[in-house]
Image (tube, rainbow, N blue to C red; front, side, top):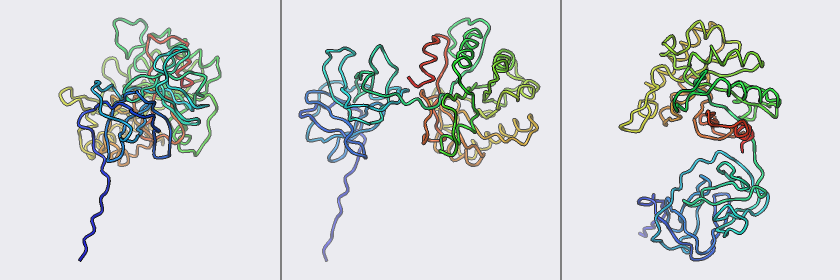
Length: 375
């Protein structure tokens, strides 16, 4: 009897991240084919490896290159994780520069017509994390893909005291809403966004989803009159166990503002974070416990509004979730869910892990405008 053994290449997580040195200019691949080139003499952080390939990241996207064209380096591995809120497509073979300067050294290239995820523009250059280091791409080598912005607010205050990032001055909120109105933006609901993401419906070119997290009283007392004045819609994600508490929305306030707000789910009692484990409750509880909490929030909101409208959207507390959470969404009839990951939303995005754009008080009106169009 002959015994045949099939040897299958394995992919192993690198024992901690490590750096490699490129000994020969090498093509870089995704599953779809060649997407970039690393130049000889450059170094990159490796996040895992197989028999034939080293794996690293360009703009948060996993890529691979031949192990035969690299050797282990004594350099310290870089940070391959970074925020990339800007999505663009290369209009030519784009040079990745070592510095944001005209005469900067080129450390690699990205193929034409590739989708790339970038950091926010600085001058004439977009930063991009390349194998653990920050590279730069000229703005004239990419075309920004705008997508749909989902703005994330929390508490609106008359006057800001301290550095609470969840607070935004009313004056700045009014300025931002005036900008939206003046520049022809249309506010939408999560249901409209859901249909668009799944390619089942169309939206106006300048569509924006305005969201508030937690259910602060200011959404009714301060934000509502501004939204009403401009004829805008917004979505308020409620922590339903906190309704009627000091500083939070009341049952009456919810009912009286349902003409502007779509009231949705931000959990009932599971908006908590364990600093010892660095996990939110939605990351540590079982599917059934999470589903029960989400259903209680749904039932509370639906009973308050006394309409036939069902709660269908969720904002994850702290933007965190688990496989158990995703299963619980189906149990509790949640069809669309939002993280706090920066960036706009695009058709085909994971419907249970949509990006949002955080609005903060240090933001200028130009920075606000840039976020709207994905820059």
